[in-house]
Structure formats: structure tokens, C-alpha cells
Amino acid sequence: MKLKSILGTVAALALTATAATAEIKIGFAAEAYPPFTAKNAAGEWEGFEVDLKNALCAAMEEECVVVDVAWDGIIPALLAGKIDAIVASMSITAERMETINFSDKYYNTPAVLVAPKSMDIGPDSLAGKIVGVQVSTIHQNYAEKHFDGTEIKTYSTFDEHNQDLTAGRVDAVVGDSIAFADYLASAPDMEVKAELNDEEVFGPGVGVGMRKEDTGLAAKFNAAIKQIREDGTYDAIGKKFFDFDIYGG
Image (cartoon, rainbow, N blue to C red; front, side, top):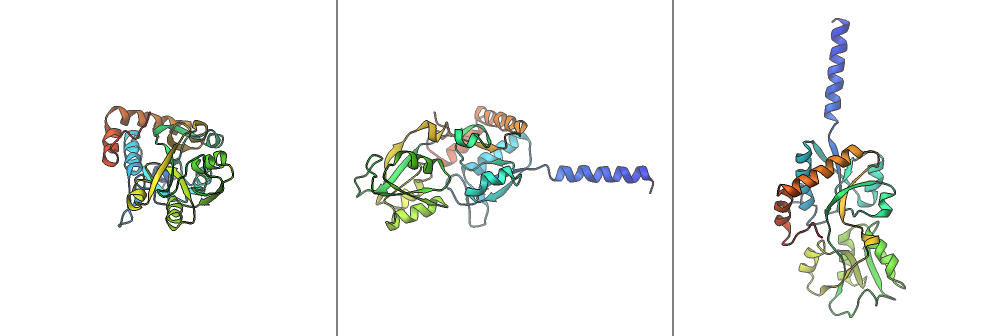
């Protein structure tokens, strides 16, 4: 084989390899977080953010592959290049923006305090109580900022603190109002005690997390969010899971 032909073959193979690795690696938190993300009996991802991810990748005309990452390691995985974007109900906060970048928001729902119906309890009466939160979340940040004299107990997953609430090992838990829907439906003795507000802690909503240097990718995600909002795709996805506008005000 002539040298020119060999070089041409090598170049073609290099291009093929580049194309094969050009997928956008989307990081999902490995822990189930219905109705946003969860695996069905077949081990396939489903939920609002799964459909949203598919719509965004289609709008960007990009191939995307999902990578499961434990929630408390998802930002380190992004910074290490193991994933390219986080689509995992991650709120846009000033603290996180010191390390990573975000797209425009793609939904916004309030945080709430949940406790047994039998307890006369609220955000201002938690001194001496134990409150459960998922680790490395805005809900942990809120509890640590606002609940003076309260023992804050952290959990690796959302389900774990719900289980301890049911078992009576914590007095209350803090989390996303929509994520609590399935739990409250199965736990009739529990209820929402209060909606929690602090824009400094909670930020403007949930966005796609990316590395700061990936400005081109951020622009693509923002354009895709705008496109699916305008063409009705976003609303169609939202109506599959919610009876209200998940985008928020």
C-alpha cells in the first residue's frame, strides 16, 4: 500500500473515532427521583427529565448518552470530564456557579417541610427536633441556614430520609414539593407543613449543569430550551407528568 493511501486510511479512522466519541454524556443521579428520573422494571430510565433530555438533544441535533453518577459525586464527575452535562434536578445557585456553569432554567418548584399530621410543627418550631435532608442539596443548605437548634441529619438519597421519617427516626424532612408526591400518596399520616422560600439558597430554578469553559454547549442548551418552550414540546412533556406548569414563574 502506498504511503499516501496509508495516511488517508489513518486519517479516516481518526475521524471515525472522533465521531464515535462525540456524544454528549448526560449525567443522571443514579438514585431514583420520581417523577423526574427513575428506572423501570426493565432497567430503563423514564420520567420528566428523561423525556426533557431526549427533546433537548433532538433540538440540538446531538447524540446523547446517559451516565449514572451518585448524586454527591456528580459535580466532581463533570469537572473530571466523565460527563459533559448534568440533568438531575440541580438548582442554579450562586454557590454552585462558583464551580460550574448552568443553562437557563428548565423548571422551578418550591421546597417544602414534611412531617407527621399529628405533630404541631413548622419552620419556626424545630428547635430540639431532628430534620432529614439529602446531602449536598439546596435543602440541606436551607436547613442549616434557617433551623437554629435543630439536628440536621443527612442522607445519600431522597428515599432514605423519607423511610426514616416513616420510621420515626427524624421528626421532619425537607425536599422538593413534587418529588414528595409519591411518598405522600403512600404515607397518609404525613403532610406538607410549610412551603419554604429563600431565593438566595434556592436560586431561580433548575438548569443543566456544565463546565465553565463549555460556553458553546451552554449556548446550545439554552437555544434548545427556548425552542422546545416555543414549539409546544415542553408543555406536551410537562402534561404527561404534572397537572400544572412545572416551568414555574
